[in-house]
Image (cartoon, rainbow over all chains, first blue to last red; front, side, top):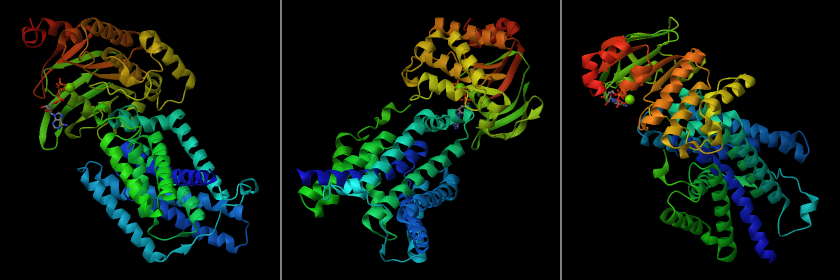
Length: 300
Length: 235
Ligand SMILES: Nc1ncnc2c1ncn2[C@@H]1O[C@H](COP(=O)(O)OP(=O)(O)OP(=O)(O)O)[C@@H](O)[C@H]1O
Ligand SMILES: [Mg+2]
């Protein structure tokens, strides 16, 4: 039973991270029907920013939690700036082009950012400091769940609750939903659609950066390539939940996280990715719109 | 108040509007009638900047609004009820109305206008928490008009509000359009295929054929015009 819970919490942790990244895919898709392939790189850049900032702060001799509290906002702002800029230079000029063009532009952006970090930093794995402070309470359950898992899950839950409240209750949140449902009408009621799109990229990037910093601290190493696999997994989670659906991305992330953890824990770690993508294939066959997605016909 | 001067516009290389000149005076109801594909919707899209002008000009209160992005027009007092209503399907009725008031900050005024809208269309008050996409066609049209009113416009543009509605609902909606004009002094530019209803409530009318204005007169005289009767009134 203890083993089961250990795996359960491992899956919950992975799933929370996937969910954080998947939200960026799903929100951007919801508004401009683009799969932002460069989104995984935003997550990677968030982690790299955190590595650099925490290195500097660590050299100053600041305590761990202070480093985390200062590193996270910097990583978030930096990654958001990247997300915002990518949209402006790689997607906005192609707003009225055929749908394949921005998609190719996105893949180009992804490759560019990977290589940029590879050249500017290093191709090797770099150790990432454990920014997540140990919690005494949690450590009593030693083995079943760790402090960093608790911090990751709780942080992700808070961030997602905040996002949900923003989307649901604020006027700007409503404007985002309105723009996703009818950009033409959104414009006619006075919504600046370009601004809403920028905001979507900024929020998605911020969430990915939070995910990047959390998981890098948990795993303990990063390189320029971590965004690729995490990106594909999170994209899978978004499709699983129903691309375009915000609760879908959250649910899809968790389902994927658990699938991977249980496959690893009860079958073999070699099968982690096999199960993840087999699940995707199954969902696409039996529920093409995803768990919470609506069939395309219903889209007005 | 709103003036189109020799407007030429179209999609890509295809010209649609040919030297269209229309004047909508303050407090007037002006109807633009024409058959399918005449260019009525294109005229409205040219006003809100979705379709760029090739030549000519559009004036609002004497100022050119050529090239002004559509989302800025609301602030200048122009609201639109577009063709096909474009209700936000997954926003509730209340949220749709709130989006109509997107740029407004006067909370009290918004609340007053919400009461006003619910007075005009009591059914919307009952359906307040229902998703817009689940409303009936008539209710959606009421919601689209209400959403436009929530911006407290000086000029209201309506694109075929009668489309797909039963005669009784059409009469109700046109009655309300007239009421909005009378009670709030809102200027109305109404685009319609239903020429009879549109001309009955209008002060003046324009007839559009193949992208050009072929006739303009007072609404009463257009209703008596033999050509209009034959082509648009089915008499
Ligand atoms: N997006 C578009 N691209 C190319 N041509 C278009 C486009 N929209 C409309 N047209 C063409 O422009 C012409 C005028 O269309 P418009 O929609 O303005 O007509 P309408 O008077 O509103 O007709 P209806 O009463 O059927 O709505 C038509 O010939 C139509 O085919
Ligand atoms: Mg039309």
